[in-house]
Image (cartoon, rainbow, N blue to C red; front, top):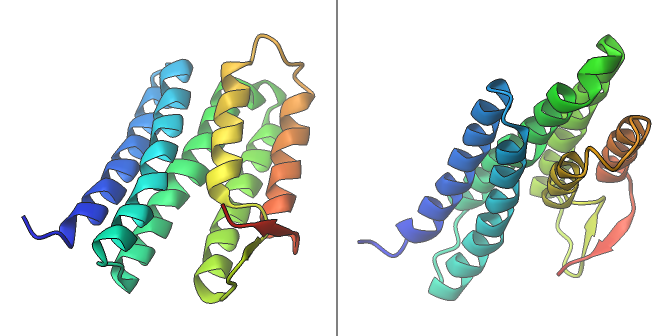
Amino acid sequence: MNKRLIPNIITLANLILGITSLWYTMGGMYKEAALAILLAMVLDGMDGRIARHLQVSSDFGKELDSLSDLVSFGVAPALLTYASVLKSIGYFGLTIAIIFALCGAVRLARFNVMITSDHFIGVPITFAGPMMAIFVLLANRLPLIFYPIAMLGLSYLMVSNLKVPKY
């Protein structure tokens, strides 16, 4: 196997988990959907490191990673949070979920065109999406009002000018 394919296969596995999370959400299997997002986070942490280690980083891989991240950490957590919690507040809940996904897309697009060496601008979507998945896993322990506040807060932080150290 061509070593250039390995990081992209891991990135595609991240995307598969994002799609799987959407499928679980549509079936009302919210815990499984949240766990798929968290597993996608693990794979997302691996693909870039492996690409750099194998010295096969590419613009194609970076773009594929961003598209996968939008599904796994933007759309999947937004739909999961809406279906499991925010649906009870109707269109307001849907609007919040859409805002989260849109801010995630803007965050990723901005990340792809900005060059910073020691920090991110705005909270990464790869942090915000898994946080919402964790919050869904804690649904029985958190009040309903927490979810719109958390989603809107994370949405704002993704598109803010906050400098976040790279890890």
